[in-house]
Image 1 (spheres, rainbow, N blue to C red):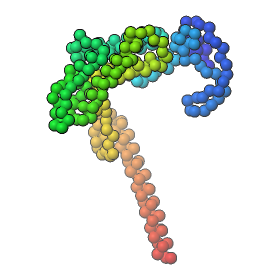
Image 2: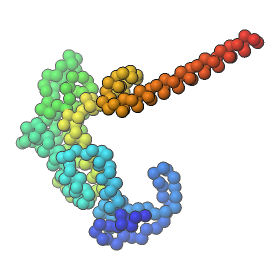
Image 3: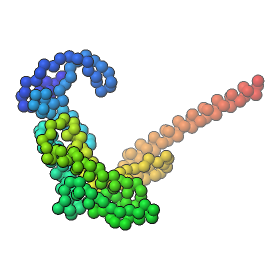
Length: 253
């Protein structure tokens, strides 16, 4: 155990750590100590926990507008972190829609609402903020789903955090900030129907090579394909040889 990473940053005296049954990431049990993810006295995040969070946020690529909110999390100012993230989300909606006189659930409803004729498959009234082209049922559902998610978030989670002093766990705060990051990315036009890639059942090698700009990578792909073809041919001829041998034995009988 690294003692420096398991000390409270505020210098609190932690309760004695007692050995107990622990479970590791591989699902194996052992007799050892439970590390504190945050100080049980003051609630501050432990240095080891902050290191893990930094790696996770880098991997997740949290929205750049939430930089200050993330810094507040690192300082263990969790309530301030989620309130800051809520303000960023609401301000972004106001700026993108031009509805600076609305807030919360009403803002989300007016900014994202639209009219779509399902029978004629025609967009009758465009939204102030469109996260995609709204030209297919899937894209229409995504726009409508985001509108309802934001309305629910503002009505519930956002209002509770903004207007009341709530003591909640660190993981719930982090989840809320990550959820806001997801909302912001959708509002920026990162629609999963546009930026997602449907996995094809088959693809030609030439198509892959044409989309591989690096020369060295193209050479590796060709080598890998040739190796796969040779292996497949060996298995094919081995099977043919085995079948032929079996046929001859059957004829002799």
